[in-house]
Amino acid sequence: MTLRELSEVLGLPLSAVSRYSNLRLLPSVESALRIIEGVLSKQVLSSILMKRITASRAGREATVYDITSAAGDPDVLHLVGEYVCMRSRGLFDAIVAPEVGGVTFATAVAMVSRKPLAIARRIRMGWERFAEIPVYRDPATVDYYYLNLDYLEGVSTAIIVDDFGVKGATISGFVEALESHGIEVKGVYLMVGVGGDWRRAHPRAEAILEIGL
Image (tube, rainbow, N blue to C red):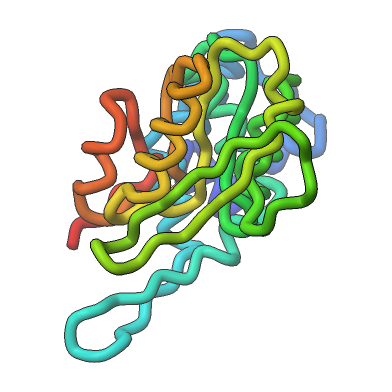
């Protein structure tokens, strides 16, 4: 994130942000708390994410969103990791995420929270104890994820983290799998949620950036 972007989202003069960033001037405690609260607000984070997402048309109906820029930006990842920990208040034992899309986001949450991270793989890795997670894309299409249960030894509560959600099929599959193994899902956090179907997957599902269809 550039200093100019930070100045815009915080509503502070660029000169002040510049002095704060190079430690020529330190904000007061009150100002520092306001800055932290501002940076970690959903309004500011969603604005930051929106600037890093590109949308393109795929046919007449579908829109394809590319969030690579956001999911690979270390500054953005640190902020969204802090946001999830703030929203969840750290009341979970572990983070669970599907491989590929959700990995960088989930890793950021794990690094901030200092809680263990379990990644569900698309290919079973030969584990002795594992959960097979079916994800129903439509009545005729099902994908499978595999989660090593040894990573969740002693875990009673978890949050699910993913980068992107539309229909909520992945979330639903993960929630059902975790709960069937006695793990309470305390929340679901998406970097980007499109439409509203994903909300039905869990009562405490939320997205930092919400995009209407």
